[in-house]
Amino acid sequence: MSTPTTGPSRRAPITPADPAVFVGFGASGDLTRRKLVPALINLRRADALPAGFAFLAVIRQADVGGTLAEDVLRTADEHLDTPLTDEERGWFLGRIGVVVGDVEQPALYADIAARLAELQAEHGTGGNALFYLATPPQLFAPIAAGLGQAGLLDEAAAGGWRRVIVEKPFGSDLASAQALNRALAAVLNERQIYRIDHYLGKETVQNLMIFRFANSIFEPIWNRRYVDHVQITVAESDGIGSRGGYYDAAGALRDMVQNHLFMLLALTAMEPPISFDADAVRDERLKVLQAIAPFTRAMVQRDVVRAQYASGRVKDVPVKGYPQEDRVAAGSTTETFVALRLQIENWRWAGVPFYLRTGKRLARRVSEIAVHFRQPPFMMFRDTGVRSLNCNVLVIRVQPEEGITLHVDAKVPGQALDLETVAMDFKYDDAFAQTPSTGYETLLYDALTGDQTLFHRADSTEVGWQVVMPILEAWQSQPAPPCYESGSWGPEESHELLERDGREWRRP
Ligand code: BG6
Image (tube, rainbow, N blue to C red; front, side, top):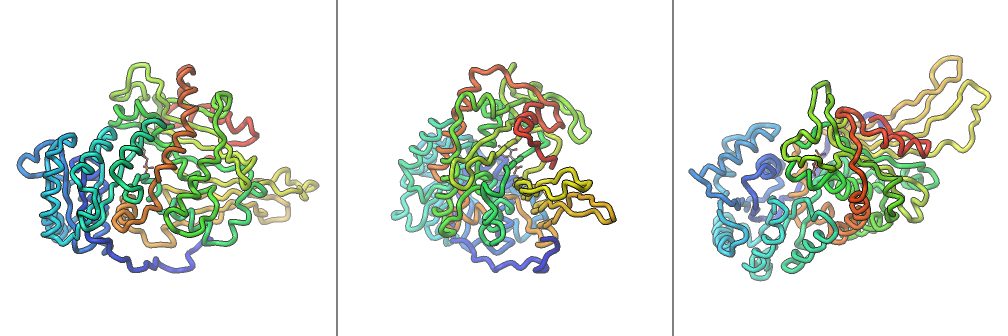
């Protein structure tokens, strides 16, 4: 598992996606400029976009001076690994349309229909349209309804497919997620709905399934007999930046745990699907979430830690605390850190604790899954100088420095019997040529080709919420969360959560 055995990356030629119009709601926003348009350009560079392609930007406020397309391209350019060429500029500017209006007014959808028909005729997009809802979440349902009422989601009438990508957050609790699912189901078939989770677009996250199910050596030991416990860490060194308005109402449990961390958990713990088909994979991911032992009040008290960052130093730079951030309510109790211990109640994992933690303003930005194996059953070195053995740990690094490391004990050279933990290391960068990526390429390509594997299905969004609801409810009657110093690894209580079980968090 150390050096590449395959040489430089061998990429299979990619089949271009279906011809389509990409209809971007909220197209003047950050996500479109910084991620989606650069991702589309990267897909084109990889020959993954079809010749028949057009972009329809839907915006709320007039495109004064007609500069939107140029503006979007300018920001996109800053987020590409290599600058845009004149040819690429020409390509994008030659196939973008703009529609302006209020998403709650039917007139907007009539304009979209007219513009869509023009772009379709001009660029040969064959009736296919991918609607991307990169808007504030309260507009998801009204936009779906507007599209539905205007007949824009009717595939038979369109003579092509119609799909909708819904950004996060998908609801703010179980009831709102159910209401959103109902609103989508009123106008769309589940096979037309793509609920995005950008963690599923990360290469290493996708690789988890390949790693587990395309190799035969891991599955036999991937269970309660060999695994002592699992740690999933998604640590960020950034604070909330300018997102106080959204974040203060959300908090880390809603923002990260209920979606991203649960997907990492599901991919780590799921059973082998019967095929690589979208529903086969999603069925297995769902079963993991369904098997999480429900949190009682006592469990929330004992097994869930929340905290809020105070000022401190991150990478030697002084930073302010959460209460001092913009658009954070005075006296806010919103958590910016969560650590929890959960159990998956099934045959494979009974008795194996899963520890999850995520937080902002932590010491480093690092996401990893660490599978800690059991101690050897018998300490045969007891009469030597060796006092204890370390557990083997398999670490799947999601970001940065994507790769996989296996920690094993080895003898230190010399006459004395001395052991030390060494690492067998696989680094993506060593084995494969880097592909420029914003993290959205695979997800957009999959939506354009109709592959829902990496998207949430209605049931998994709801089960995710079901798991966290008792925690959110219990917190309402608990005192304000403790603080942790910015630049640390979280509050003392998070360390105590593991110490109580005779374990400790890995220092990534
Ligand atoms: C988003 C959250 O979904 O994921 C942000 O809303 C978070 O709060 C971000 O910072 C983390 O994503 P990544 O890809 O940088 O790990």
